[in-house]
Image (cartoon, rainbow, N blue to C red; front, side, top):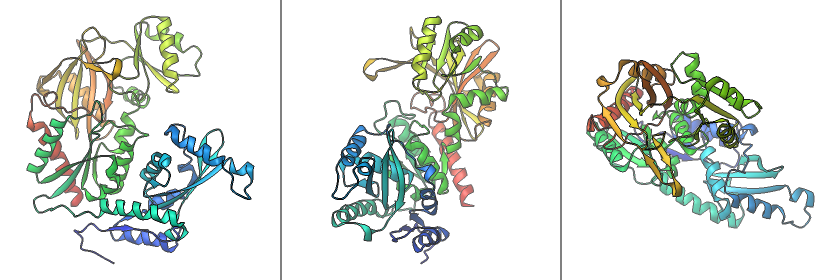
Amino acid sequence: FSAPPASRVRVINLCQSAKYLSQGYYCSLLAEARGHHVVPSVMTLNDLGRKGLFSLQLDELDPEVTRWLDSAASKLKPGEDPQEATHQVRIRTFFGQASQPELKPVARALFERFPCPILEVVFRRRKTWQIETMKPTGPADLSEAEQDVFAAALDRFSSIVWRKPRTRRRYRFDLAILVNPDEQLPPSDKEALEKFEKAGRKLGINVEQITRRDYMRLPEYDGLFIRETTAIDHHTYRFARKAEAEGLVVIDDPVSILRCTNKVYLADLLRINKIPTPKTLILSRDQKDAAKQVADALGFPVVVKIPDGAFSKGVLRAENDKELKDALKSLFKQSALVLAQEYFYTEYDWRIGVLGGRAIFACKYFMVKGHWQIYQHGEAKQVDSGEFATLPTYEVPRNVIQAALNSTRLIGNGLYGVDIKQAGNRVAVIEVNDNPNIDAGVEDKFLGGELYTLVMQEFLSRMEEKRR
């Protein structure tokens, strides 16, 4: 089967066997060779054959999942070995759905990692529940009850991937913006997202907002713009990886997310490449004299932080030895490594926005009144932030801009926000963010709509290059 080059052909592979070089394997292989989008992909089939990739521990998932597994394991069937029955549970998932409501979180998580129509999963309990084996299977293996669940899941999935295609007459490219409508501190507010859409349309790009539920729709698009706070063990990273694998232009790309979200990696990267930073120590929870090392090398006050905090979360300041020990004890519960940094006081932090190797905006983020950070987290999830001032990049001290550009060259050529402290001639890079804020009335205060056009123009140039 072949189709016109401009069409988007999708294939759902329901072959009974998907082993290497089987009929099912060739179904996915030939579909990909013809440029079709197939579920499961050859990469997924190969990954399912590598046990190390899915030895997933479930202690971080919904407690209802583990409670259901405990309950299921305790129920014996006639003739079952009691010892075996209490340690192993077998389930099937259908397009990320499960017969049991309690298993929906794990079914969805597995489908995001290994998109496969029917997945047979065996859980084994050791100290915690883990996935022992995972393999694709076909409809012929299903019971009548499972066939009903599968049919409903297939119908739901098909309604997503085979819905009536959008008209493409007016637009040259399609761009997806990944958002989370429920996120408390998103990288872009609703007004900014609307401005991205408007700027894209003027350039011939159809811009559409999607959520984590639209994972399987990524092949419909030419580009992905992530406007949700990123993390490694998170669907944003999986979206970036899948989009890149499908040939989309991606900002933020997976490598940038990987490099920026861990402050330990960044600290070492900047130090090795002689980028100016505050004095920094990397501490391990196994170090018995960690507090003494910090006090001797950095003095007080001192800042300690976990590697993957965001919006000032997981960042503490210690004024004395007791506060330092308490802070380290608290943070070592969250991470095996912690950073300690000299306290470099400034009234504001520079935020330099860099896209494709050039500075596109500059802001001063002032500290919250009476607080030492630009964000202050209060009770009931209340978050206060300081004032800001947006400047043209040509008014920013040259050494600040240069530090931002030098830092981002080590990361990639995506969109970054570089936090920098400056006192006189001294400049210190605090961190490089892969998912910088662009909010209406803040970062766009100077450039206005031009800022959104710059971002969309970058996508347009890269998508045109891909097409060529």
